[in-house]
Length: 70
Image (cartoon, rainbow, N blue to C red):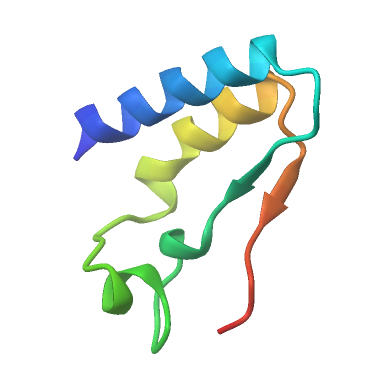
């Protein structure tokens, strides 16, 4: 799981570094609960292992986070 999250963070950083348009990072699968990523997608993520993904994305210039209500 950590390797996947790190790979995602690297991809986000690379895209954000070259992007000239606004990019939104979808975070629905990060959630938990009845309609969260743990139930819908089978994810087992938490704040601790997603913190590095958030930090890399934010430091690369991403400031729009898409998190729809289910």
